[in-house]
Length: 283
Image 1 (cartoon, rainbow, N blue to C red):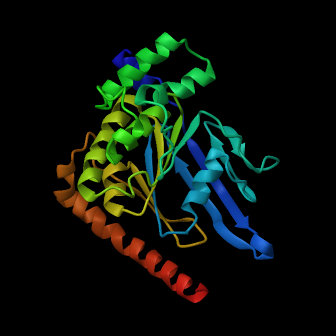
Image 2 (cartoon, one colour; image 1 turned 135 degrees about the vertical axis):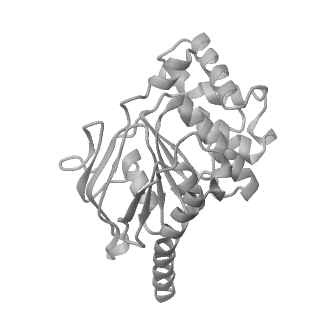
């Protein structure tokens, strides 16, 4: 595929506007507010990192964008079109918003190539020859050449994560929704995967909504970092990361990166303590 086509095909797509969203769960009649009048703007082609304590409502927000959960009030729009809001409490899931979960979802009985081709084949928008050519091109871009005949169980956890992200991109989404995709990886593997994700991002410019507990991960990858409150979830601080791309892992030792870590780490710690205290009371 032509490099300029790959770079430009997602330009202008994937702008997300979250406006005063409220989500209340009601298990057995006990109303639990998970998201509290949350507002956040994510530009098309931006990597927006969502940082917050466990159970604060980050995944609830992601699921609302994906169309897996309804909202009680407020609205979420993408590229000016209503996903969910007044008169439509739950978004319709679609291939324009692809979720990559932390536990992985590759078909273990299919090899890498067949996993990558599955979505476009089912969509029927291209012929098999064109889909196969696209798969090989994207594998090459992601450093996966030579793995096409391997099954997921034969790959390292890091390589599987890369395959899952490429499989998502094979469907040409406007937005990638990543729910702690690197949580189970060791720190060295994570650093390699971060650089690999940015390499893929530079070539595709898809909007990325990325949930993490790792502040260093958030600052290294993101254009924008939204630090969320403990439950109920809403932004406590939204930070623009003014470190230019392309980024290599050497940036984590730069003074600007250290300043950003210092600026935000106390905010994250405050919310973690609140979440822990609430858990202690609930327990």
